[in-house]
Length: 136
Image (cartoon, rainbow, N blue to C red; front, side, top):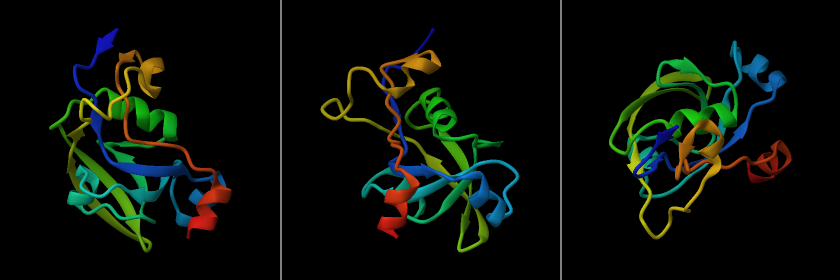
């Protein structure tokens, strides 16, 4: 089992795109809709915006929130990762230097425990598509 000393943090709230939404955007695989970017986080500093669509992370397609959580959990704070996004239907490449959870805010066990990573909690949460529509 892999063990993370300190969990990597991106700093975004996402919602999975439906297959229909991905098709409308011309994406071959599923992606993630960025609902919110936490201020002061590595994602904010790198220029990821709310309403961006992430379709690739660290050189590979995104297959949903669980996939994204596991892949972030296997990284370490300070790792540089690439994001391929769509912003207003324009593809962009953004590199993010992953941040770290503070001792006070990091839970003792996280969503990534099922990925073989202990004490990891990527800053990701699933927002239903209904709530996402309300937020736009």
